[in-house]
Amino acid sequence: MAIEKSVDAVVLVGGKGTRLRPLTLSAPKPMLPTAGLPFLQHLLARIESAGIKHVVLGTSFKAEVFEDYFGDGAGLGLEIDYVTESEPLGTGGGIRNVLPKLRGDHAMVFNGDVLGGTDLEAVFDTHKSCNADVTLHLVRVGDPRAFGCVPTDSDGRVTAFLEKTQDPPTDQINAGCYVFKREIIEQIPEGRAVSVEREVFPSLLARDARVYGYVDSAYWRDIGTPEDFVRGSADLVRGIAPSPALDGPCGESLVHPGAGVAPGALVIGGTVVGRGAEVGAGARLDGAVLFDGAVVEAGATVERSIIGFGARIGPRALVRDAVIGDGADIGARCELLRGARVWPGVTLPDGGVRFSTDV
Image (spheres, rainbow, N blue to C red):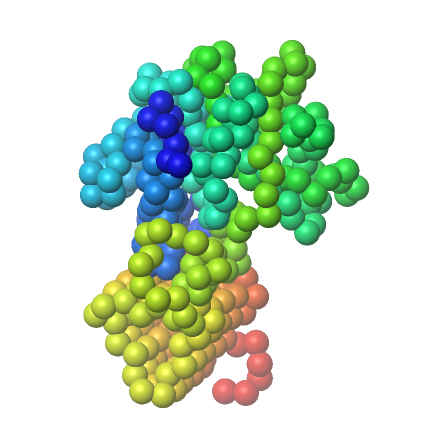
């Protein structure tokens, strides 16, 4: 059953995406191509398929890019409003800042950099059946030490919000998706930075508000780092991560119209070859993300790396676990490994960067 009409979606997309630089120097993180579409489009498609039609985007960094691309949302079957923060307001302040645009009694709030597969209708059903003030989507993870943990009692009611700890009492973590009653949003302080995790939620617990968790083990990944971005994109291509925005067959690669892949090239591991990109003979792409117009020359190897718009990888170069900025030119036989980042427009001469001694 679709979510009722009295629910708005709020997507927080104001971050600068510093961990994904240099790619985010030119585009906000939620607009980077992921399986060939802006990352945010996958989330908006999930929102629409759950029955929510009105979306408010809370923007800040490069705010105009979102409206230029999505417009009023009609092309996605949505009605999209935009609210821009003139100064950073944090997660809680960002939610409070969109209040004038909300239409309904409840708002489902999303972090704009999470790739997820949870059942949004089930999250809202939990919220309604528990008569909750706030409901959090909690996901079970194998190693919760890197995340804030959220224990719940036998009824699903949240008992605490715990910061990262080496000895977590639960494997349930905050997955960055919440349902708020409108009156709770109205109570968030206006006009200043507020954190939902450190301020709003603890204060709700302190006054015994009805805060519940919806717990599952659905697909979940924060795509804020290059490693997670690459894996998230590959998971979409291979059908491991669900997205209603992708309607083609799943497989080892996604080659977009207008791209050229020469005979003898190996394209595997959930690789994406963007529009107008070129892959030369004998090249090996494994878990690579090639943005539109990128070129990988003959015999080059690209593994678990992001190649920016119009960048070029020269013949027999090796790029592994790296990020290559827009328009960069990597010379033949260069080796870029283990977290290397090349800024936009930079040219590396043939053999100019090596990790091995042979030339």
